[in-house]
Length: 188
Picture 1 (spheres, rainbow, N blue to C red):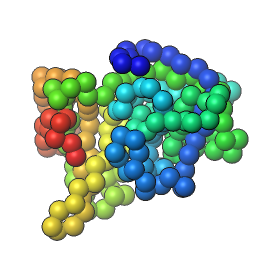
Picture 2: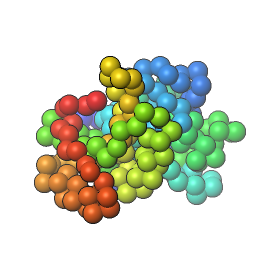
Picture 3: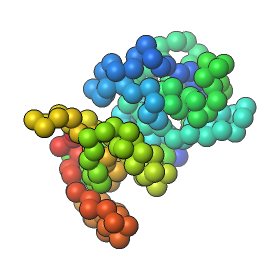
Picture 4: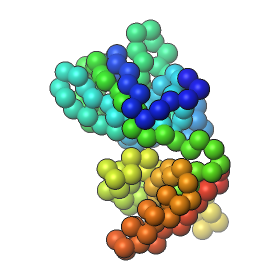
């Protein structure tokens, strides 16, 4: 799929993957964290944000595409353990779902992130990420290694223009954050 639009819908069977892949590189180059709200899809662009609904229970969760798969016939989406747990499909292993694209990743280097925090402890970064994900579904934690040690940077976005990012930055500043504007091609 060369291009996808917000509102694109796909239905079918989703599965999940967890500890066997935890800590390994995904197809996007990120390290897989089974507790993150991520998913694998064969064709959607990386960083696409999808809302997944378990059609049997009505449970919903938002996830970001960061990997390719599933590679099992009859399945179209592989959820991280975190997303599968939110949708209550860990026990059964699979479920019928409806997936809707609700956000698009960076289409070009003219996309922007706002960094809103950097932490020495990942649990603090994850806590802020969880807090911000409802407002900014593409919120991510990036690991950064410096001479002083490892830091976990929390970034919201992706914004499709500098103007859009600056507007969000102003709102976040009113809430006490000191956002740093970062061009998406400078990730991580």
